[in-house]
Length: 311
Image 1 (cartoon, helix red, strand yellow):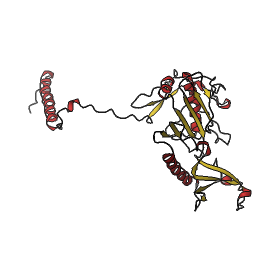
Image 2 (cartoon, helix red, strand yellow):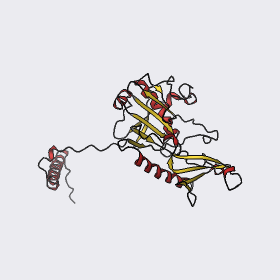
Image 3 (cartoon, rainbow, N blue to C red):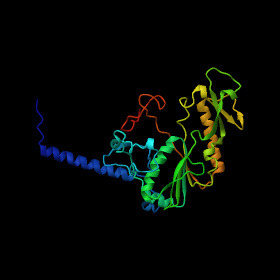
Image 4 (cartoon, helix red, strand yellow):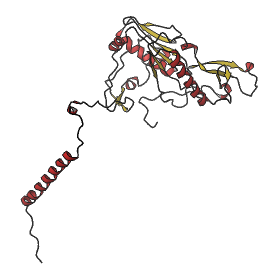
């Protein structure tokens, strides 16, 4: 039986190269024939808009060079919440985390540029402590651009600041449910259930007094609510009772159902009463991160890094 003679490396190379070249040329021709033809004569001058950046899609990055823009002397901190002044443990590590979106850059706030753009305008925050905590940090950052900033508490504001150099006011109105609510003790109730201390009447269609009269003052408003809609804030012995049009809602609503009704009514109120020119934002909630118990159960926040996505 005859054995086939071995092919030399040089011969193999010369056999493969023409084949590869033919495949390449064929693929190029195929692309030319199958590519869709433009119906516009000036299509080459058209520029595709870059994809929009989703700032919420990203991850936390540890950067030891990332430091706060302010120090413990900022006058807008509440003493018990001034973590820098109170020398909270691992504070330098906590302040070294920064949020990095996946497909775009997120620069740090430039307080001079920001206040310059907002000159002669007012910014308001309405909601619970999530908005308040943000406001405190925000005021301290903006103070870098105007050391003459002064505390401001008018129009029912819980806290705030006025920046005279730019004629800008930034303030927070505390309204944890957004809607008006008031305590009714057991003595005022017709029912006499064991363990019930009283109820909170929630008028789902009436805004809380703290922000009821600010429609003509602010140019930008940021709303939030959420963390107070839980039974650790309003246990069954001090539950919420929902009203609409001055009358109790029947059948009675569970807490989350009442939450939905309040949101619908507050949005309708904002759209009806507040000027169209006003810029309005709805702020989402952050996860609770107490360790060893909830806020009212001797819990504490010992973490020095952001929560993981599935935590």
